Image 1: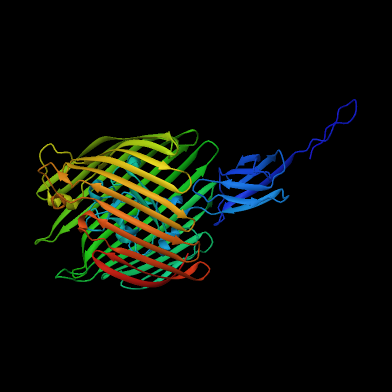
Image 2 (image 1 turned 45 degrees about the vertical axis):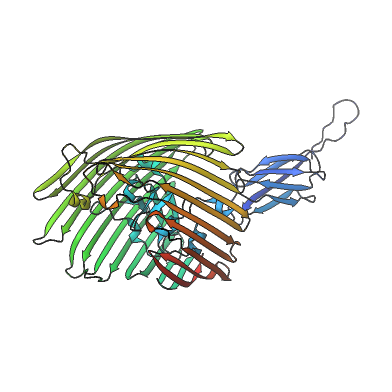
Length: 602
């Protein structure tokens, strides 16, 4: 309350100004930034407004008597509370979970009926499992090869191209994110099919699960201060997978240090005359980040070894070693700028199953520098990136030999413009390069004269979307892919997606992708077995989720290579104590119906 009086004459009437302050958080305790806060009088007229800061706080200068307070934020339920003479108010709002994230959250992963992470990722719009169900890629691009960033390590298997998804036991990944092909320039090679970042820990140290049924599994993720250990194992169709990780995240020298190691083992029993085999993967990473008002810096160093051997002979069938170092500098602002450099060293050997044994060896060196600029957001903005990669590959199999490489420019351009009323249009173009694996060299060890030693993928796309910033988001895309190098691959597609929060506890997510069958124009076809197949896929996912209470999911999906089969997958989450529940469900995987029942926490 403030008072003022003139120096001479009679005192003026007191002038009164009230201040209403408070904070806004969601049900998980996370502050809500940029939420619109409106105070109204008894007649519903506004008497003061503000927007919350990054910490969720607000301060409204009132120009009348406030009776109610209303909070609106993007993809949140509007909340109204009575002020009743209070000057300090704390509000808890409910987010619309289906619109909050484009990928399954930790809560989703706890409840969904899938054990394999590839099936969880297959729920993300326009993300398609490979034909054999062992890999994943964005819109089926890059011959089904998506780059998997395993606990911070962009793991590359130069020997066979096998996906790092194989190193995750069922229900082991707790954090997932998907970066499309538009950021391929930041990774040098192998990112044509998108980038899929997975972590065994969500940092909460609260997850554990024990499942029985068709594919029993065990996962533990405790926390000891800043130390986050994790362990998991599963037995899925005779494939025993085990993994352990240890991560440390702490403040260090004015920045944040994240370091970790991991080891996994996958054993496959004998079947149809095939000897049992084992796949072993070890990785280590150290990440350091600092931030100031003007700059953010990131330094990442990682290493990994992947090998597979025949248990009957105890000899390596193949081995890949990977070493990478990455430096990135960012400057936030209305136009965010970034520059980075990446160096990778990959070596591999492959023992051919012939007599006498022949060994195929290879190595690939990649030096990449890149710059990028970005402005705006998903409804209005633009991004541009340019990578310059010096790639050198050397693969040998006596008496043949393949070597080559050189400088490659990898551009990426994109933009989004609003059309009004929540509608927007976007367009993008990107390129990526990839070194053929040793296994591909075995299929075709002598490419035509003059053929590039590198594969290059190009993607052109446009999209029309709508987002009401409340309950509905929809998108329609059209794309065209060109691949030069190995098979001269071409593919076109149309896709549509819809996310609708029908009610605070009921959501509906659906998407469809119709792609033309893969077409290989070159006579050099190491992927000839995939010719005529397509990446078409449809997904419908309905959920009832009452916070940490009862939850039910029902999912139907259809893949282009699976004929007309439309399986129904479902799960039921029944809480028994806070943050823990009995979970039961079923899913059809690779044509086999699986059932499970388990005890889980989150």
